[in-house]
Length: 192
Length: 192
DNA sequence: CTATTTCTGAAACAATTGTTTCAGAATAAT
DNA sequence: ATTATTCTGAAACAATTGTTTCAGAAATAG
Image (cartoon, each protein chain N blue to C red):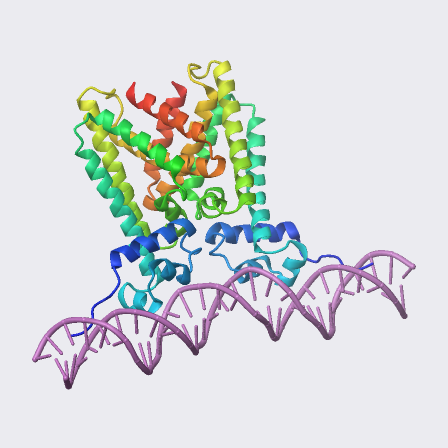
């Protein structure tokens, strides 16, 4: 018998996520956040909680979006290798066109080192990313699209960790050609 | 005709570097820094400058140390491939045994995105790292230690960006075996 | 409509932030 | 030893930090 929460929590989390993504955890102030979320800090503390809790929710949201993407791609009607190659090309485009790099990677280095909950969320995300690659690689092997003389688990681990360095490279050199060339090498290595 | 600076600036930079390395730029407060440096903030502002300037000096110091290491390794009497394999094994040990990951990588994602000077220092560092790998790969090819059907520049770029992902993986999963297996695959791929 | 509960906005909170001030200690040159 | 200069330590600075308070607006249920 009382009033309901007025603001759209999902939208507010989305907006907060964008701020954290761009500025990092320590670089984003509560004012930055509540301004973007268009709510008062009292509303924030009444519903979501403090800054740490908000960040956890934002990272969770970020990884949820990635999860949806992987699930959709796994349902694709294309062959496993084609699906994988498509994914790599889109990943490259995101690296090259994205303004603020990858929030998961940035958070891994800035926050996961000190915050257990964030580390667990990102570890689970990384595990899903691994599983996505692993499934595609294993299926591609079974269908004879790629060589099967290497352990798919090892390949998935190896490739999964590769993207991170491309993000770093692009931050430092802003060289799209360099990223594309590495991606082509990556694909060639996989295919043959 | 006056007093000299009392504290050891090189030592103070080293101590400040350790704080930034562990806590990041935004996570480290001026008190954290001056405590570790064992100097008063007035001395800091009198000699080195403000927080940004101090950070720049610390990142510069960090990359100087790496530069020395690469130069020493290039003078090694071992074969290029052996030198490279040694380097990879030591890099893995550093990843696995280091408490605070890699300051260059952390700074690339936290600071280089917004600070031009830091970006330039880290880009130059990355370029030296690339050159180190490139020299070794090219020499190994010329001496017939590894296949020469791939562009050494491409391989150097590709491998240079690989380490970063290993750091991330180790932060998230703390799994030494995973890192070692990726390194072995890396070496195998290079050799054959 | 009334009563009750809950949310919101603005203001205030103490603590911490990066930075500056300045008196006095310390030293080098005369 | 005196002088001139510069460094150091402690304190203070205003601004910003994350967080709390609370009066009043809003809305649900009776």
